Structures are given as C-alpha cells and as structure tokens.
Image (tube, rainbow, N blue to C red; front, side, top):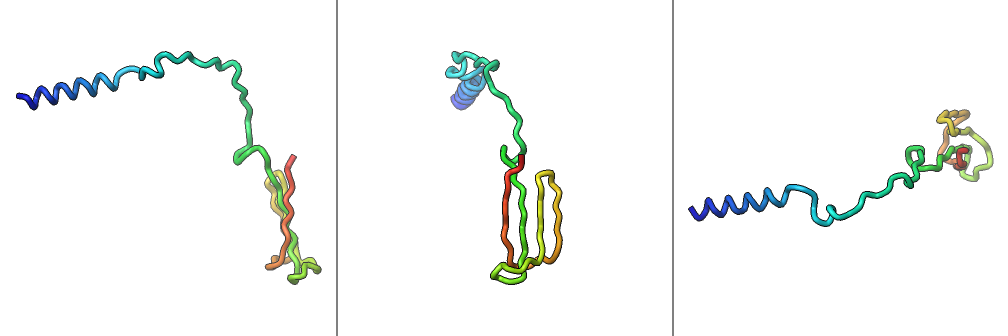
Length: 94
C-alpha cells in the first residue's frame, strides 16, 4: 500500500511538471518581428568564387600544357593536357 501511494505521488509530480510553459518563459514579452532584417544568401555563404587552373609541362612552370576553368555560372571548360604541375587562380563572382 505504501508503494502504491509513492507511485501515485511521483506520477502526480511528473504530470504537473510537464504541463504548461516554464515559469521563466511565461513572463517574457513577445519580440517585435517588424524590425527583423531578412535577406537571401547563396548556399555556402554570400561570396562565390570561380577558378582557373593552368597546367605546365615541367616543374619550372614555363611551358603551358593545358587549362581548366570554372566560371561563375557553373560551366567548366578544359583544354590541353592535365599534368602534375599547375597553378590555381581564384576570382570573386559578381
């Protein structure tokens, strides 16, 4: 019998604790949403970059072998040969 009163008492405490907003939230005023600034950004952040890679025939990077270019619209172009020697140039898209 003592066990059943204990279970009823704990159940009543749990049910009372779960209902309604917390006391700290009840007294807070609602914020004014008319002053919130909204803006759209591209996925991955606000600044987008394009890339140009130039391939060379040797480690000294004197003789051109090929090129690879990714523009701001998402188009990729490649010409010549792909080698292990290259330089990358990044540019900010408008």
